[in-house]
Amino acid sequence: MLKILFVCSGNTCRSPMAEMMLKSKLKDKKIEAEVSSAGIFANDGDAMSLFTEEALKEKNIPIDEFKSRKINDKIIKNCDYIFCMTKRQKEFLPAENVYVLGEFTKESDVSDPFGGDKETYLAVFNQLNTMCDKICELLNW
Image (cartoon, rainbow, N blue to C red; front, side, top):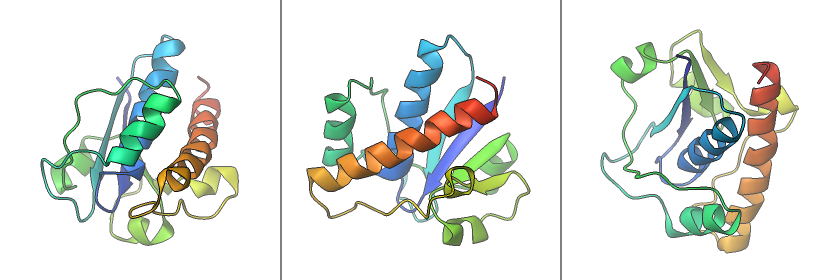
């Protein structure tokens, strides 16, 4: 089974949003893949941010049980594709299967909504939605 990992800084905003979004898209397409997320500077066990949860609910994306986790070598070695939110995050991950989401959509980095209002999180949701659609297209899903 294909294993996909989304990575951001704290694993409470962008990467869990992308994780839940792609899981939902794959479920709708009846495609089996393991989708997860982690953060470069994450604290293990933190909840996803309130506005991340609200944005997902507003867009009717089911939310699985979630706890943040810090990325490590074991997680990296267990993934087929690792998608980062920024070019800088990619530099932290010494693996050949690491990509920046913006590489596929010709967009810039996904900005960190941490500390922003709900509208900021909804803007990030829309950006990630386009990027997850592109992942599905590139993987012929």
